[in-house]
Length: 115
Image 1 (tube, rainbow, N blue to C red):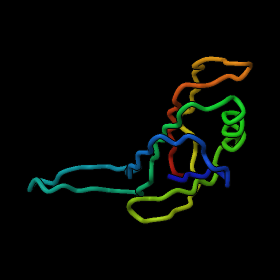
Image 2: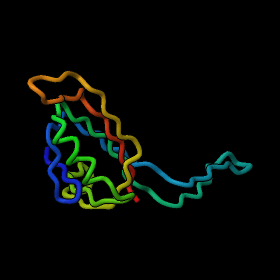
Image 3: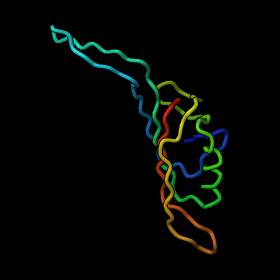
Image 4: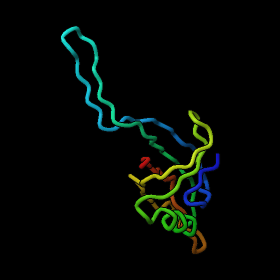
């Protein structure tokens, strides 16, 4: 699976979860029990798992996501090939080990939300 952040191809993609979420929704019921919904917008949320990155790859990833919003290009199972602006909601890095002066990181979980 190819996922790009500002034309930087993510290395080591293990998996990606696509979720469509509803923003600013107000759900109520009328006297007959019918659901009334005020839905403002639907957005995509992506959770990407990357495995076994080197320090240099992680630095490139951080550079590509430095701005608050950045372009993400991916294969959307709902709409097909898609590019949209996203925000990095969660981005963590945990050291796995260092070998011959190269630091490797455990699998990373990146959570992105569409603008």
